[in-house]
Length: 436
Ligand code: UDX
Image (cartoon, rainbow, N blue to C red; front, side, top):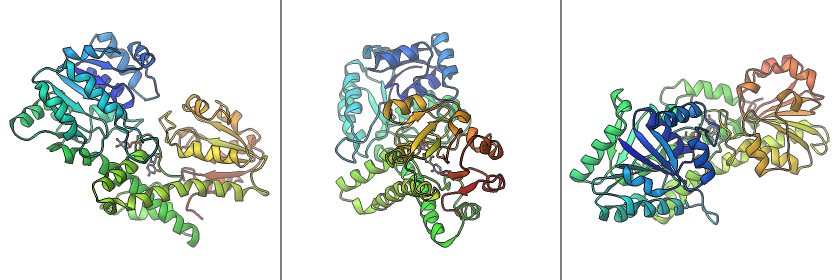
């Protein structure tokens, strides 16, 4: 099939490359010339395992190309909208400028029978409004949310755990669903559940999934707060409740909380939209979810301050991690980087290292010292703070060896990802989050 993908950020670039890899002819379109030039050369503009290979193969095969020229969409019959919906500068609601611009820009190139498939995360009600602009061209709008996780984006796109599409009622919707079945033929062939629904449900599936995940993380972080005043261990508690299949252990990792380009902005946009709909109280708990999440960063900073005699002023603190999670170079709303910045604000001499996120971090926070080499970063540290659970710190850093590099023997495990017993045995004073 001939597909166009409007917006070549995280979502769009991965979607374009993944669709080409399963045999479609794809043109990726973006207004950012630098991004397009990089993608056209088979280079990913961000760190995502497996993506460079997919881009190189796709471009070499001739099935994948990139351009800034929106008229290239005219040759395609299915058009994916994958532009960003960031948080508004002056509020919590989602900024729909890019989605509106993408659809308006696309309209002149649409033909009767084309499908426009929105993938961006949007406030419920957006698809119905956009359909008013698409329908007069004879094309059909569907809403087809994306659930990819950074670091696993290629796999999540090619073999998702479910497909969801909001389509118009009647024959038009049935035909659109058939076209999507053809687009996603490889996933359908392996019996991936495909939920065909209306626009509002499809839009809500996405935001409610993210709201649920955020709530699950904040739930366990709230238990960490209780553990801290009772001497309980939140990691054991999570293991124990996680054995209940109704609860499940995934996303019960207590620590400095969630960040990234999705969960924080999506729960805020959801609250804002619910307020507009007169149902603010239905999701008022999301404000608490957000507040718990942000408090965990304060807690990590407090732990560092109280662990060092005389506070952090002038102390050399090594921060292991800057990305919002491992396998990513994304620092959007990163709790890791936030902790580093706050420690620096308290007068600490902060050195940050991360396997992938240093360049992005330096651009936003040039005031911090960045060192690529982990061991060099650790050398002479009074305290070590682990804030992103990369294998380089979690599995591959031997506490006895680390002790030969640092000055102090204090480790704050902001992700509860270290083997506390092993670190203590090697002479370290270990502090976890919600652990005795
Ligand atoms: C998320 C959703 O998982 C994905 O389905 C959606 O499409 C986009 O948003 P992503 O932002 O890539 O994906 O990250 P995710 O793996 O969900 O992690 C989000 C944050 O939660 C990270 O900062 C992570 O460190 C944190 N987290 C996750 C925890 O603090 N504890 C956990 O147990 C799990």
